[in-house]
Length: 279
Image 1 (spheres, rainbow, N blue to C red):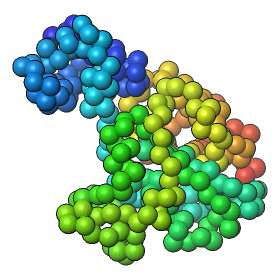
Image 2 (cartoon, one colour; image 1 turned 60 degrees about the vertical axis):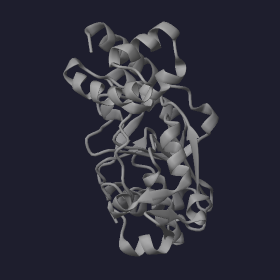
Image 3 (cartoon, rainbow, N blue to C red; image 1 turned 90 degrees about the vertical axis):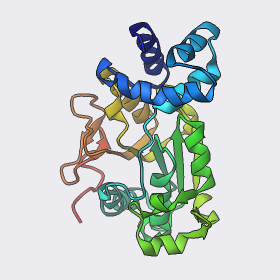
Image 4 (cartoon, helix red, strand yellow; image 1 turned 90 degrees about the horizontal axis):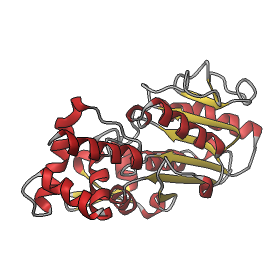
């Protein structure tokens, strides 16, 4: 891949998805684009890029963006955020907004393991919400991963990653080489194609936002823009959960880190008033 092709593809990736790829990651770009070129019947990545540039081929550009999106995920990933939801966030919402609907957003949800983990957790312990109705919305930029998430079909390898055997046997049925999630749990999550770089006003307001292990792929300004957009879609009180390697500190001032629970942030103005404390 020559420098001109690299610059074109990476600039389009940043503009369309926020993903930043440096020259040191050229090998990664080439490894993701080579299969696309072969599938399109082209002899090289250069031909692929030339075709996209010449024809402004939106279909191919979307395929390229999709290929570069990292979709690493698994059920109950890292566990800590789910503990925070159980022991800190939901008790605070029960206290401050008893009986009121709880809306949860999973941003960059990939193939659905995170929102489905939340749905299974709440189904197993209805008392966590104090009887309040719950809506779970999960969004991603990739139609491919959203289609897989909606289908609720997972390989043996995927269900073995983080999913307790009892939970597997309760909510999944084996169909040949795959496991299918129950209709009941799938019905609890609404999936939508949403680009985090775009306005999110149509999604409405949320009480809890999971945005984990996605900000690490963006530059500072893009992180700031995304967090500000998320903040605008969050109620008071409301809570943000990030990945272990992510923080709002030095990025935006619309969230405050919780002192008791690492990786949990409260929308500014709610910190210290929402009843968050160690269980």
